[in-house]
Image (cartoon, rainbow, N blue to C red):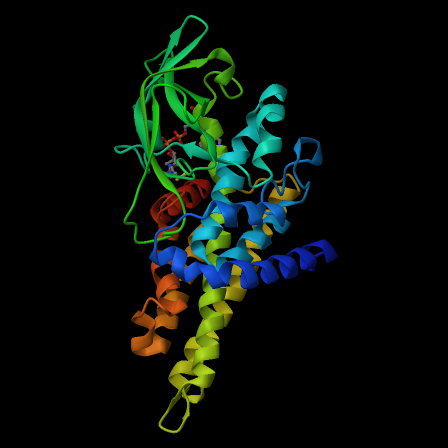
Length: 386
Ligand code: COS
């Protein structure tokens, strides 16, 4: 068995170019956009121009035909600078484009993917509901069969990219019927923003990712055509869970990037800031914090890359994805906390990146499956409940 953890030249090049882009184009704006809770369509377009959307989509549909490791490195590099822009990238690629890419029919792929790979348009993923988060199967939104189509009723919440000025539509999971034995039949539907009976409202005053777009979606007798069903009727729940298996890798990448970003600013600050006549990095209490951060980041990175590599090799990766998401988000939390501590009082000020890392990491243990759900997925895979 060969054991080779070398990144390819292309993967190194992607890291370098996205890092340069994030440092020169995102960093100067990140603080102000976050303070003003402002989503930037302009920055989204620029992220499209450097190839951040449709990274794993084949070139035939307007994508870049790259592997998952490359995509995850790109998310990591954006998150190293800013959680909000990384959220836009990760959600659009994994949850917006992903279901279309993997489950869409030829016509759906040709209609939407080329437009979604440019950065001119975004697409959301409507799964979570006010009363159905971790228990995704408890969703209540319905799709009633009618002549030549469906009528949607219900609501969704916490939908990243669901209502921005450049959002083209959302994939919406709904109960489309009843199976023998009384189980719900779930299907996914492609609903364009602006469809009568569908309203997407932007959510404000978030603790995290303030410059990303988050929406509530409302459906009131929203009529959509037969062609709006994604893939096969009744496949909705599995489509969503499969999408989340992949999506969790990009949340893990956000955790890794956040941890790396917090580490980088913490190390720079600790080497510069003096106390008792010496840089504070020379005090063992602080040096050991930095050593722990570097060690955990290294472990998180290889754990995540291995999970992505499994996916690229078409091998089972659900458990590894859950492990990576769990571990990377917890490493982000510890690194952001140490980063604030090393900054002392300055770490509590909005003008320091430490404050933003500390807030932004908090979603990572919640979104796309809480840490508790990841532990459940891992424990199930170990046969704990059999
Ligand atoms: N991929 C594809 N299918 C899967 C799957 C996966 N990862 N996990 C489970 N399934 C299938 C099961 O095989 C089962 O199929 P059958 O009905 O044919 O047997 C079906 O889906 C239902 O599975 P299960 O009984 O395990 O569903 P549960 O209701 O117990 O829920 C969890 C499973 C908790 C894992 C799921 O609801 C979940 O992931 N919740 C978190 C949702 C989430 O992350 N929300 C945040 C969204 S932010 S965008």
